[in-house]
Image (tube, rainbow, N blue to C red; front, side, top):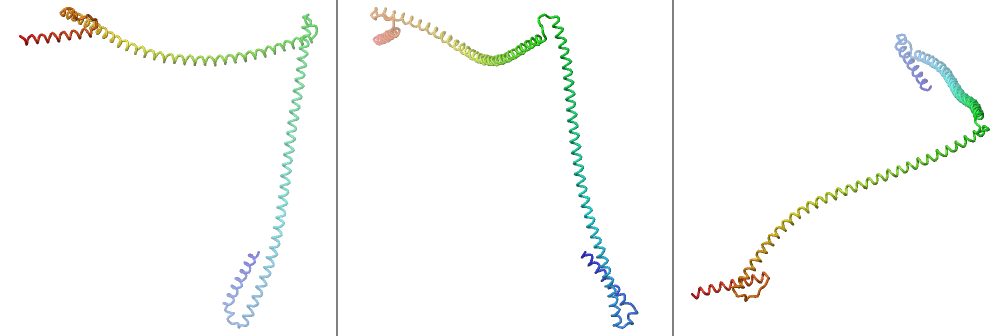
Length: 290
């Protein structure tokens, strides 16, 4: 409002100045005296100020009406918001009630269906019991072992208990069989691993045996060579000993058996050497004497 008021004052001031300058430039005003023009200007100023005051009052009245309308509009908006909140709350409550009603209806429907199913099952069981009763009565008419339906039921219970006991024993036997099979499989696997290890050891030992056989054959060849060489050397040694012994006997004959007989080859060689050296010396001496 202060901004609008200042704008109006500026507007009236501008209009006043325009009228003042227009009147000042009028040809008729030049003919008036200064006092007359001053009075005229004062009168116009008063009229303008009165008009401005009236417009201000009218503007203030309109602004008050506008403010009142705005306040009324704000109250109506607040009232509408409150009504909207209440209506939304009402809708939510109705939705919740509807959901609860639908849930209750669904539960009641399920309960009704369950009761109807139970009644139907009971009726079927009753019909089945009637069939069993007629069957028992027919058995009692043909069989002399059972006198009452309870006898058949007791026999059935006994057979059922026996069957249950047999099933339990069968299950235990199957479990033991499975455990035995598992143990057998584990032991078989262990034995197979042991056999595999033994086979690996045998293969390794076989390889070592072949290597040893090859080395044995090699050393056997070497030994055969050594034996052949030793045989040849033994033969040569025997021949040498025989020749040495013959030479020794010849030396003894030449010396008229003055040398004692010995079988030691080294001694024989020494005697032969002495004889040869002595014979050579005598030969040289005889040659010198001649």
